[in-house]
Structures are given as structure tokens and as C-alpha cells.
Image (cartoon, rainbow, N blue to C red; front, side):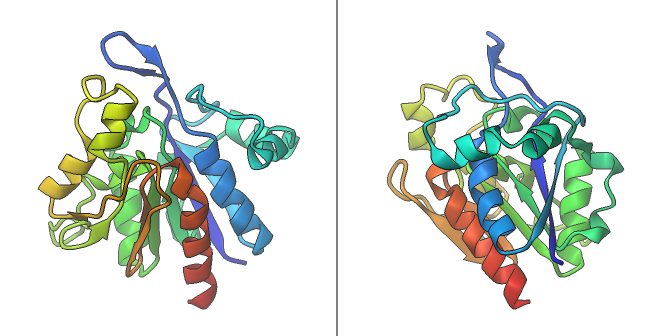
Length: 225
């Protein structure tokens, strides 16, 4: 059975005003449903382990969100996430970083994130992320000292989307800009478009609307390997 490690943020507040935040539930449940339906096992980790904070943007009228929210096994997984630095990533075929604004504070500079990405990618496996999840890729350095994203096409939450949700001056940096600074070819689509980019073993999506497409691309790549 193929195995994927989902990683979510442990950061529950953003900016100087300490606004509540966390991980985006749609960006976990939509790819999770696709992977599980395809017989792929998923574990969920976070930066600190334990209960992972939600970003407060949950739409419980979304049938996929509602299904998982009523699933006590899923609820137990997000209430008792694995601590990323304690996970042996060699047992996984892919890693996936879900979004939510909290990722902007604890994904980029966490050694466990950088180490996990390097180990997975250099083992010939798959790295994937959606929305603000690509914050994990900003400082992802390979053994040779190069940025994993250098020269690669990526999708991520755009500057225009950040402006639309009035967070341009809340986040510590603009994600699209940071990815480009470290050599990525950012591929933006109109706000809230389903936009997923596959560049070899790197899969990235732009926003919550892209979460299911990232899941489909990840499943396809896993099952065709």
C-alpha cells in the first residue's frame, strides 16, 4: 500500500494582532478523500504534534468536509497529529503540505520540514503542497545546496488572492514572491481558479479550489510509479 504523510501547521495565530488561524480543513479533506478512495494510506503530522488548530474558515455545508468532520477516526487524527520531527519519513511515498495562513509562520524555517522534504525528494519520491502549504518549499534546500524549487514551475496562493483576503500586510512575506526569489517559476491563475502544476515529482496547487486536483495528481503519480 502506498503511504502519504500530510503535514499541517501548529500555528494558531497570525500577525501582530494575533488573529486566529491554523490549517485549512478543505485542503486536508478534499485530497484525503481522493487518496483514500484510491487505496492510499494517509497519516497526519504537524510541526508540534498533538491537536492541530483549524483556520476558522470551515464550510460545513461542503459534503466532503462534513463527511470527515463526522468521522471520529479523522477527528482523532487531527486531535493527535504526529510530531513531524519524530516521524520516519522513509516509510512514506510522498509528503503533502496543506495550507492555511498558519503555515506562513511555522513551515519555512522549521528544520523538520526542510529535512523531510530533502529526504523524500532525494529518495525519488513525491513532494506536494497546496495554497499556503508551499511555504514549506521556500527554504527547502537539497544536499547539493540548491533550492528544490529552483527552475521548477509551481502554483501557490497569489499576491492578488492575498490582497483580496486583506492579508497582504498581515503575513510575514508574500508567498509567491518568496518562491520566485528562490528560483521558482510561479504560475498564477485568476483568483480562486483550480490551478495545479505538476513538475516532475513536485506537485503544487494555488488555493483551496485546487486541493482536490492536487490530490488527483498525487494519486495518479503514486499509482503510476
